[in-house]
Amino acid sequence: MPKLPAPPVPAALKEAPPRPDEPRTETGAIETAKQAGTTVIDWIDERTSLSGTGRWLMFRKVPKGTNWAYTLGSATLFAFLSQAVTGVFLAMYYRPSATGGAYESVRQITTGVFLGQFVQGMHLWGASVMIVLVFLHMGRTFLYGAYKYPRELTWVIGVVLLILTMVMALTGYLLPFDQRAYWATVVATNITGTGPIVGPYLADFLRGGPEFTTTTLSRFYAIHMLVVPGAMIALIGAHLYLVSKLGTTAPPWRRAHRESPFDTVEA
Amino acid sequence: MNQRQKEEYLREYSILKSEGKPFFPYAVAKDAAMACIVMAIIITLSILFGAELGPKVNPTSTTYVPRPDWYFFFLFELLRITKPPSLTGLATVGIPTLGMILLFLLPFFDRSPERRPERRPVAMFTLVFVVGAMAFLTYDGATIGTPTALEIKTPKAVIAQGAAAVAKFEAGRLGVAQSGCEACHDIAGNGNPGPGPELTHIGARVPEEAIARTLDNPIAPMPSFRHLPNAKFEAIIYFLSQLK
Image 1 (cartoon, helix red, strand yellow):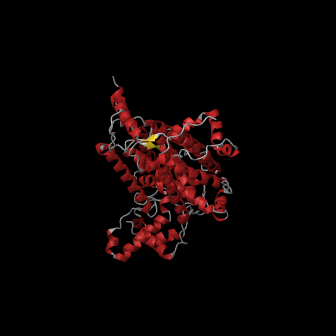
Image 2 (tube, chains in turn yellow, purple):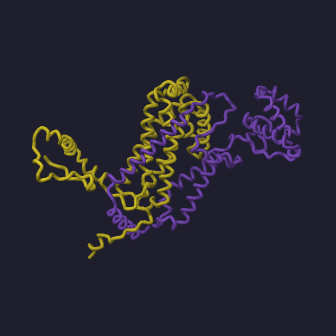
Image 3 (tube, one colour):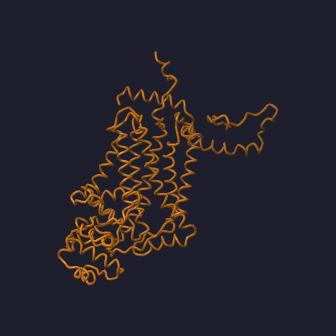
């Protein structure tokens, strides 16, 4: 059976090699069962060749000096995942109907559904936490000059993700359909309408017409549930690919100590 | 950055990277610890504050004062402190759009190879200024009583009458702001210019009793305010009668 090459794990995590006094491994049924995991991964890898990608992703080196500020990006991703999971559970009970149902279904979630208020609270506060993390992550990137060559595209995608996060916050605000949600959205769409050139068209598109109608809620629901999350998942994928490909920056005051291996190659 | 600087950076970075540790398990462990902290914060916030649901939507109400969520307070406050109508467009669309464009293009106009914060004074000054301005606007937006609060100084004539008169004037000012008068009336630059008449000098034009009669039994479409608590109603009348 072909064996995968060992990943470069630290010594503490490595399996100790067999001692001379231990009995040799047998090729019995128990041994086959023990190898089941490796066999399955081998089977998948033979068809997809994903193990190389996995190793490239997991065992790439992060530069010396990487500190806790570098966890802000993955923390933002985690907040996004939390929003996705709680959002799916809320969607199971929510009815996006302005004429009757939206407000009542949210009331039902907070009063009738098991742990409903807790999950809705997590979704509501998760939005705030995510926005704080997005800004901290951006602040870290700016402070360390990490947006400079060769990571300009990662920055641009990050800015799009910031805007999409704000769009999520804005469209999600309407969904409970209480007084605050309604009037804040009326103001927000009216402000959108004052924008130059595309403003009035964008406002009409958001509202589903020149006035706030029953269609508006369905539109915001579709944007909040499908359009923006889909775009965000795709862009997060691109963002993460670039991060893995280019590597995370070292803190700007960190300098390499030993000479480059390329120096000796020079003729 | 020219080609030499680019290659210098890549060379330096490749050394730093080769000196580093593998992503798994070192960085993954830190990220996992951070994820647990984020989860704990979200759960704590949810348990402590929950999710409140306001009164049901009523598109016909004219007195409801909309407020955004806290992370839009800086935009909301920017709009609130921009008084001249000609500049409103700048506050609602102009400045946010400009900020977004600058943010987008940041790596294209800041092309110096320098990354150390202490050697990037312009960038650091901008960072402090933007963060400070956003923090100030957010704080201001959060602490303001109501977004339509009237900005009118207490007249000297009222101050001369003593502390009780000043308190009544201020109670009236708050009452007027809470009652949504600015939706239809202009009061010294606050509120909308119509459809109601301007109230900036209403005390000089109309006697106090007439103000009380109008508030009690107004001409449509103005709503009646006779349902207000007595003290508040009288404070509003006093406030309006002092606008001279």
